[in-house]
Image (spheres, helix red, strand yellow):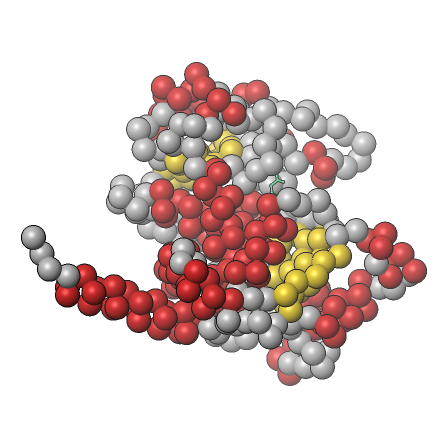
Length: 371
Ligand code: NCD
């Protein structure tokens, strides 16, 4: 039970401003839950970036993997996925395995007691009886926040990580996207001052909504928000871009902007969110990237896609060195492991281990005879 939460019933909590919620979800200092992109400031993004690189490097050796697995073997995670998922589910699960965390999952509401009429609140409290982390994907937008609120009112509060909430947010995808962009520009001046196209269904694409918010922490970014008019980025995110003085352009021209892009982030039509009987088209040919477009792109452009793709991203591009989406997918595992380490407060142990082994390597290298 957390006294800071106890003063709010659900309605008053839900009506708090984003910054007040962030303060609560961060337990006043750093993310305790991982629910929304706004929780991650630049310092935290830098920490995740560094830690992701370190975890990735440590895990390359058997000894390093065993060290990582020794960090959290006393913890258990519930993967509660009420919407389809391949990558997010698997990458969270492997991230847990990397850190020695045991996992269980509920991926189908028809096998949970919710079919007997149990409320989602009771279901979540039940998870917290057995598990130390709840990683959840849910079609309802506020459900992950609600889960955190419920558990903060219970006698077993555990961190809730949002693995996708309706058409609102996908903060951990945003973290891995930022990581991928930063890696892609490592030898090209970093993410600062880059022009990034976000293309496709920006209205209902939760990945682009979270990513756009995280990008506001980088200096000199220019966003080209490219979508058909009916799939434009919503006002709430636009306001965040404006409040942070992030340069942006809203356009229904995609191809025209390709030559100026340093990164292109493609998305598919999120037609599972069609409502009111309308049926969106399954693809948007004017917002698709094809092999023919490659000659119009910068030499070092980074092409990203959260996947799954339909025909907005031609598989013929896959072997072009500028295609980063398969690496992006793999980065999800490392970034999510880094986030869990930070939430579990184990980062110092990881960094100490890393310094110790790099010191040993440097020492051995110096001791080697030069010829
Ligand atoms: C995305 C999602 O679920 O929002 N997928 C993912 O997590 N990598 C994007 C999508 O489904 O289009």
